[in-house]
Length: 242
Image 1 (tube, helix red, strand yellow):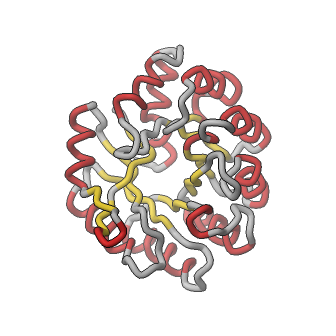
Image 2: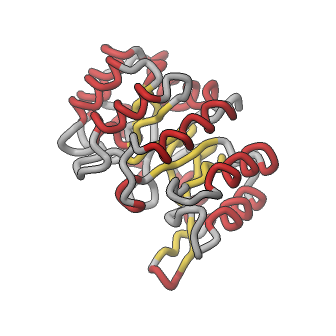
């Protein structure tokens, strides 16, 4: 089974966001992806109503989609919304994009939300990359402050900071690296060698990135068949208790 740990579905035409669920399903079917963690582009709380759309997509494709709620930690109601989303609606994870909400990964409000996710038994997926507020060392500091929470570092540091992402993950055992939109297959192999295959998960960032390309990176990284199975689905399935 292949499970994509990072994919996007959202429909807010006023902001130019229009990636309906059927678009993602077509990609998944074409490239043999059985299930996908889905994320909106909008944050909750916010005027776009991200949570309701996310739940609607999950209800339309309950056997294919795994919902993570993208949130802005600066709101007072953020913790209550996350708890209700997990306990009442079956949301399986928290997504944080610190660039969009201009909130450092280790700010007090962000840390409170990550710790809550940990208590609720769901992971936090961070956008990471090459821009301030999303650098691996900053996410590492959040991991240090939240040792009982699982943190997935999306894009494993991006184009310029993937090696740093591996070093940070070595120091913080609660960090898992996710492979999407990071262009170097040999660094996926290096992450598996240094962290263990159990701490690397496949993601595509589709439809922004192409799932065929992202799957090919895993195929050419030089992993054993057992390591591939773990990275392509078994790890995220175990983490999310699927």
